[in-house]
Length: 68
Image (cartoon, rainbow, N blue to C red):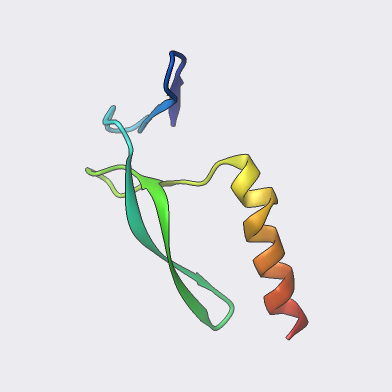
């Protein structure tokens, strides 16, 4: 994924060179299925999860599920 630096953050798919779009994405972890809004390439469907989401909210949910 490429990041273009300007007034607004725009992310592009490295493979397709298309601007990523916010879309509903199905996420599966352990036995749970979740639908969340994430940035996704409209061509190849590659999903982008930024570092703050991966190390923040997703980590909290993961730890909560593992404790059950």
